[in-house]
Image (cartoon, rainbow, N blue to C red; front, side):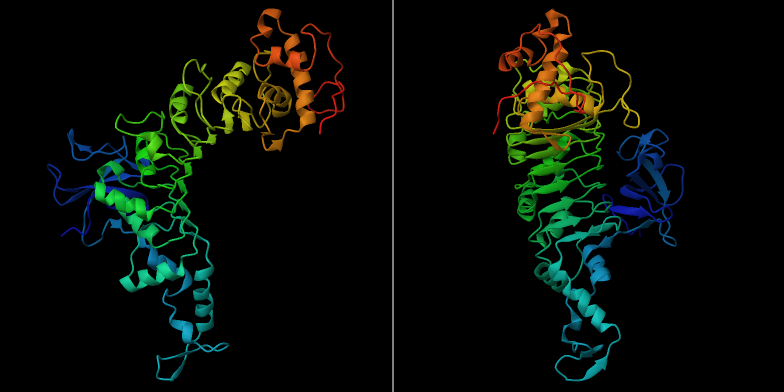
Amino acid sequence: MCEYAVGRRYLNARTRAPLTLRYIGALPGLDSTWLGVEYDDPTRGKHSGEYNSVQFFRCHPGAGAFIKYSSASLPLVEGADLVAALEDRYGGLEGEGANGREGADVVLLGDSRIVVEAPGMRDVVRRIGRLERLREVGFENEWVSRLGGSERQRIVLKQRLKGVRALDLSRNLIATWSDVGDIASHLTGLRVLILNHSRIQDVSSIASEEQKRLRDCFSTVSELHLGKSALSWAEAVDVASLFPSLETLFLNHNSDIVTLSPRHDQNVKAAMARLKVLSIDGCGVDSWSNVACGLSALPSLTTAQLSELGIRSISPRGSAPAFPYLTGLTLVDTHISMWADIDRLDDWTSGRLQKLRISCAGCEDGVPKQNTDPLRMSGDVRSDRPLLIAKLAALKSLNGSNVTSAERWDSELFYIHYVDRLPAAERDAWGRYTELIQKHDVGPKAPPLKVSSNLKSKMISKSAPDRH
């Protein structure tokens, strides 16, 4: 009889590649029992769950394969349980060595007062004592699949690991959110949960009563990492609904996230009511409209990380709602290159953007391509810095460096001179140009101002009023 269960996760016994079991049974014209699997890495697959044009299971395109079952040499390997992994690293959870005499490798046998030599006992006691001091625990690449352990071990784990604040279970074999909930419920102080490279069941398949239990299990978790977990945005919203205290969500490199539009039956504002930080770096989004529809629906969002996306321009906001509280943005390795896009970004954030990290994907080894178009960013962070500062009135930090009042003053003067070189018909539409010539009392056709050679950012030499 086959020892495996459909829906559970295993390692291929030969290649150690993680997979999810999707089918157990016969294949037409072939002897024996066959296992239909979906590999986490689609390049290891051979098809999409079909055999001789018959569909036996569903999976991501190209990620499926069939493996012949043999009871003599089992083709799949189960994952480890968390209790066993903890004991392998730190010793027995129940601390059997707690009665050892200080300074000696001995142990008392219960209340018998019989002393027995136990080489290495001091090391066991030392490791056991570390459990209460643990704040971060990581089991990445250890293929944890469940909580495990006896009832007594679970009780002790809950008592001794209540100080743990962060748990990393990346590259796991966990199949269900119920298994994750069982683990989280035994770490009562948990704040950060890292589950990168996961393949966990869709939340939509979980019964409502179980979803309620899971919300209690995850009630303390405020930061969640689900990078490279084959999630769509709709699936991510479902997951977020299980974490009532969620404030930070990392969804990096999920290629199935191509839009931030939810399903018609989802309430994003309720599911992500407290979310302040969202990262979708490296996801499949390739248009600004597919980002804007989602960000504007998040009522508490203050920071968005949108690096390594295929977005090439920022569309005008028009009558669309602005991002209500967004003040921080990351656009590293961006394809956005026109200065008009920065003006539109300022409009989308209602002029409140305070922190920006930006770099151009067109740069090779940090060197920007030759650019002679004044309407296009150069790609050089030093050359573009004064114009970015001038365009974004609320900016306080650019690429990790604070913007001082003196730098802003010089940047705005440089900006005016830069725009003065453009045809007159284009100047009024160039961001804050009209506003700044009024602020600095500089005529729109003023002669070029002298550039100070000792300022790396090529700011303009003009005396600024005293600023305190």
